Image 1 (cartoon, helix red, strand yellow):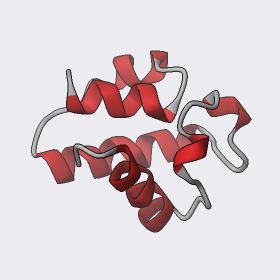
Image 2 (cartoon, one colour):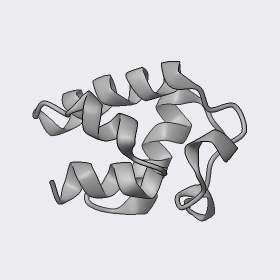
Image 3 (cartoon, helix red, strand yellow):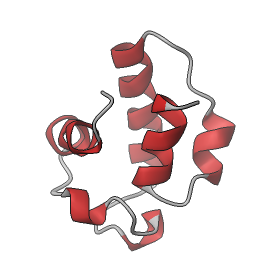
Length: 75
């Protein structure tokens, strides 16, 4: 999941939010339908897909989906 489009697609398909790559830089609180439960689901999905542990603390500090993608792919 190195590609931002694939990452957003995962969220769209697995979490059910109608997001596009254009939404990636928007603040999480500005995403229609986004809430803290989605972040927990995302952590689980990312750990399953990458086989690595993902820091919930780091994700809680991330301002956007693009920032979360960066944390997961770059570290």
